[in-house]
Length: 44
Image 1 (cartoon, helix red, strand yellow):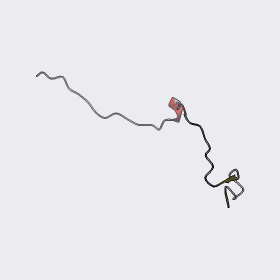
Image 2 (cartoon, rainbow, N blue to C red):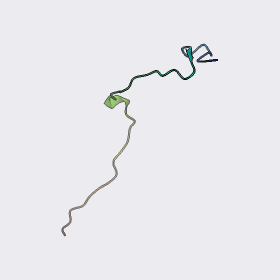
Image 3 (tube, rainbow, N blue to C red):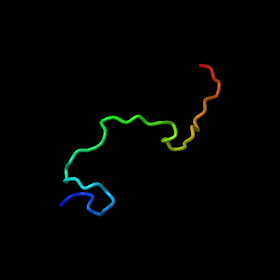
Image 4 (cartoon, rainbow, N blue to C red):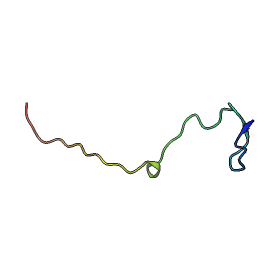
């Protein structure tokens, strides 16, 4: 049996390693998020 036999994915034998070893994400690929932490001035 091969993965991707649904007509949408590329046919390749099960267990075949594919893809890139490294990927560099761009800012536009990162999900929107916020930073809610805050620090007020203080002394010790």
